[in-house]
Image (tube, rainbow, N blue to C red):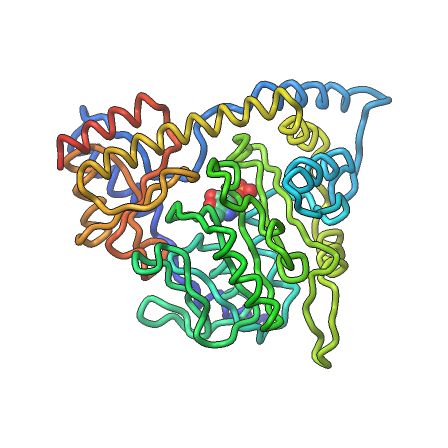
Length: 406
Ligand code: PLP
């Protein structure tokens, strides 16, 4: 008799986006003439930058020629892309990362989900609340948690991100081994300073722990004092893995390209307490289970680092930041307490209402769709998330309607 992995039975069905869709559909049915503006999703809305499209086309044409055809490529990514990433995203900011420490993949979702495979089943895991759900669910699937009770899994150390700590979690009270951090944060839009990040790096060093740092929204940082990478912090090479993505900077959500940085010094321990480098383990895992991102997609990603591509990406991200700024301004004028909206495409809004109640009110009174904060964890109750991924015109209309409705 084949038995299933019963850890899967512990998973909470995620009804968040299907519940939103149901409520929106029912509202639309009752008000067929009312137009609805969606500020709920985390997907980008604008097309790929011209430089990426040009490189993409050229590479596709190459694939149709004898001389330019590419079969299986290196699993870790082509040298041209790894080199461009290392130079532009790290070395240019004074972070010592080499091309062979970059692993190109088809998404930060897969990488943040898969990385936990490298660590022991009894690793003590710390996860923020509210959170991008992938970190939590993949640890549940792996069997690192007990059952779900009162909104939380037993066995996980939750790092509360609340108004009280300005949405940057404090160090855990109990010892942990594996720490997930995400800045600029989804869903809260909060950022972390170099000083705050240093506290985490020092903690990881002292406790022989490892930080999994998700920087998928790095391109939204405009405040020069904020770290773009955890490797800008001294000592991080030994204790941190970083995840990046081309999804939110260059609009690759449907094209798929991302990367993970595993420095050679990055360390975990075997059961005898000996240091083990994580780099060869991730290399082994990547090569065994992944066959590389397609050549045209990697050429399109490489174009992000051309002069033309850099200017276009900056403009693209800038347009979403302009939306975020407008959302934050109106929300502030309406007297709400909020975080995000600068250095981030998300605005996390606090109220004294239940999250779903707030959602229904915005939908019914303003025809605007948001995301209820409770869907991201217990600490999200009472909050909603507004996203800047839409056209400026739609954001303007949405905010005017919210102003009228409230
Ligand atoms: N990490 C965070 C925090 C995200 O919000 C998202 C997508 O919304 C991802 C990772 C996924 O990125 P990718 O499209 O590269 O899989």
